[in-house]
Image 1: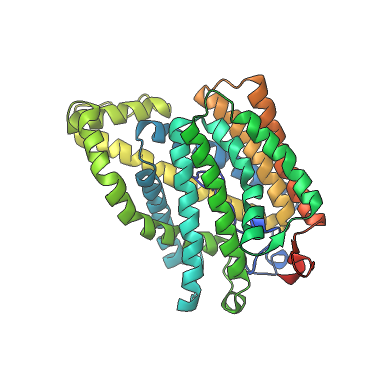
Image 2: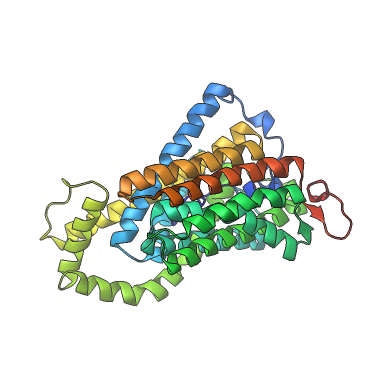
Length: 388
């Protein structure tokens, strides 16, 4: 659910590298990225990786939204998705597919803060998707640069360059137009904005971690950064999902279809329709079969979350430029809006569509402006990028 709107989502998130909003590649993901790009880093390799990232993000966003509309418990859904990711990560570490991270205890607190706000962002996206359309939630999340700039200003004492501030005007204007859409509720607007703010806080902690001596001595690869954050997020969310969602989920489940068995049948049937799997799990009288199919849907959504997030890190690694990646991420946001509206059957009016386009283009323009006009310290006037 991260930069995507997946409970990513938005994301949604998708989950995009925490360095994306900092305007540079951070040291967590290691320096010397260019030396490690290797085979496939040419235009064709980058294009293939980017298309895979786009496709996986769109499919996960649509699939995750369908599941959330049927099973309205974002905490539980995200926990299950992260759990599926953990089931992929642990064997990858064991078999050496991903190098096992060599972390010190002194590195754990800052990574925990990154994972915590990563989780908050995705859960907020899930809550937004419960009452509002995927396309419009994704458009509102174009506010992420504004949230990051505000966190930098009030927490780190860094102010954006006037050119960067000017680039935020179309973002704010576009989101204002989108927020008037009939498919956006007040709750959906609130949680979509909350998700964007959470991304800004997450990026702040990621940038702080990049300056720690431990991460320069023991840098993490892009894949391992996401893997560690996923495991930490899962461990953090499990108790909250049980406490917050548990009683309500059981009560909802027992009344959804006239009893536990009826609830299982109702959920399985609705999820099949929501994700276009009309021919599977037809044994609706078998509660175990219905529960099994629901678990399969959640697990598959989790695999998609892991794959599209891993693909995002790979694309960032191949491109080598965070600004280029951020512009590509804006294009991805536009694709999620378009295909999300088509797949979910969401009508988009002219004003809302125009607002979404303006917000997405403004998002891309902001990253280009930040490249040439980085933030500056309020006191010294020295470029924040140079100080970092």
